[in-house]
Length: 252
Image (cartoon, rainbow, N blue to C red; front, side, top):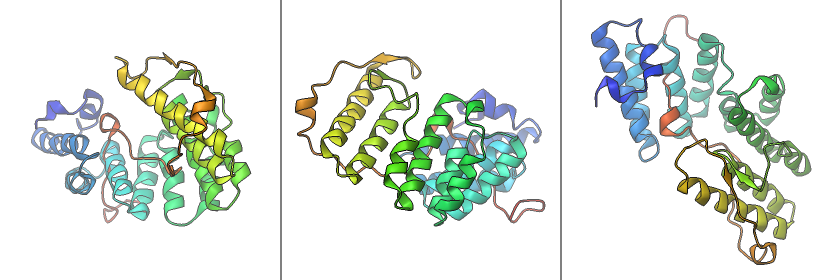
């Protein structure tokens, strides 16, 4: 691995470091991107190694948060996400913050955090991820009908597939299943599968794919797998890094 295996935007954040240190940090971050899906524990070790060298760089703190979430350390993820948010001034990881609040057993706090954000100012994908996380928090509280309402957003378009569509459709299927609406749940789960297949066949990640009409009578008979509403870790291309909280000035 070399520093050039890391996307340019992330490398730019390392320019405040010495050349040698920036090179080492970049290599650790590139390894995180490579490992996060297959070996999140090892990816987390690389993120922590990067944080020991560059704990005041936003992308490093973000990466520690993402890998901590991936290994189930929601308290560390939450702490790192708060620090990243303070450093960057960005709400692009707000859904992960909400989900981490769920992970530490505070769904009420998760909803409060999510409601405090101006959703109209969020990128579309982040807005969808937040809706899924908020729906999960409602489920944690036993508010199943309200969980479904959280997913009633303009991006819930069954006729077109975007990068966020499979997760959104699957989340809706899971809530419908909890409500005992099995036929509708089966239909939305099938839509999630169709959207995922269509996106996999597309060339551009953001390309809009028109989804063929689904035969609802056939789909309703399919089994619906249990789909946890909790948001998954970021994709390897989106991984960015954070650092341990013991550092002076870090948020506890």
